[in-house]
Length: 429
Image 1 (cartoon, rainbow, N blue to C red):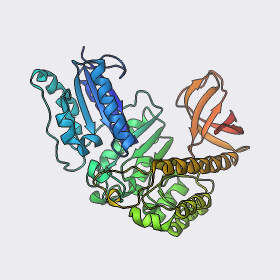
Image 2 (tube, rainbow, N blue to C red):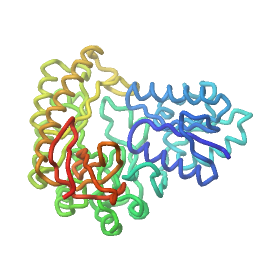
Image 3 (cartoon, rainbow, N blue to C red):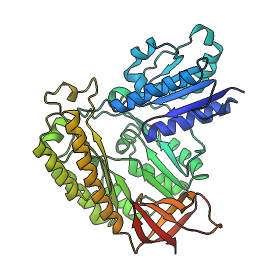
Image 4 (cartoon, one colour):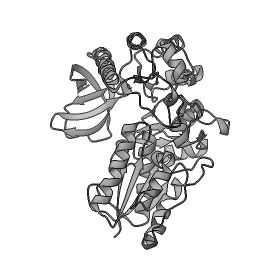
């Protein structure tokens, strides 16, 4: 039996795509093995959002080639789209798939296996509309991802994603609902994923609020629906009203701010000011008290002065985020920010990352502490020697001791007793 292994780097969209590749290859009769094992086919689903991501993508390619020099190597995704010419010159890569042609990956690999002796290599497809990929069941996850949108038209000055993923496009609403219903048969929680999820549906005369309402209406078995991330400019009054009314929508929004200083935001080409961002999240909190609002933050952006950075830290405190993903600025080719003067030093970036992470830890502790003595609904994910671990609607990590009558994917009401090392500790009500 032909064996294959997949390495997935990057975002939730990549995770969904890799699961689709796995299902398709198993459907052809192939057997999945661990990426560290010897396989007949290796698939590296790459990321290029940062220099670290591209480096890890290259490392995975080399790892596959070392594991089995005779294997067919398929490299797919963002790194292929942005570095296709370099990869075409690299020996030992048999299949390249960029932003287009992903829905044909399984059949492309099948054909390439028959042509291995002549160095088969695909042409990179031009992106033409939304390529639907299907997943019926995530084998190793309690919650399921559902890719509903791809591409980005925003062109923030630091970001390579519009070049890697192409223009914005969405899965048609009927297919979104159909896939959500199928996934809800095996998964109590679904995460709607996209590159720019908040702009879902514009070419179909739909929007994110409408499609979420349709999913909830048609998938009665679904306990919870979550959004991977959303831009602050795309959170409408209608969306907030639906979220307030519908308890099955997770009480957590990941809203990237990227900087807390207006001058830096302008250089980043972000479409809001600090005041506009803070006003928006305060409006959300007024309507949905206790909601978890997390964010992404880039530090060490070109020309970011110490004063601007301190302004950003103060903004983070004012925003009261539940947690922050902190990234050092990464210079990406093709982008406008790469052409700016005044790039910060690696040492400066490192110091600012540490300071921002300390800020994030303080904010996270304060937010978690507010749940001690309260009850939250927790989706059980896995059991270890300390008990059952899961996440609440607010995406709070919770651990609790339960009886043997419970199992993975159960949804339970848990009373929070304490907090330790960033994890809430509770008991079943």
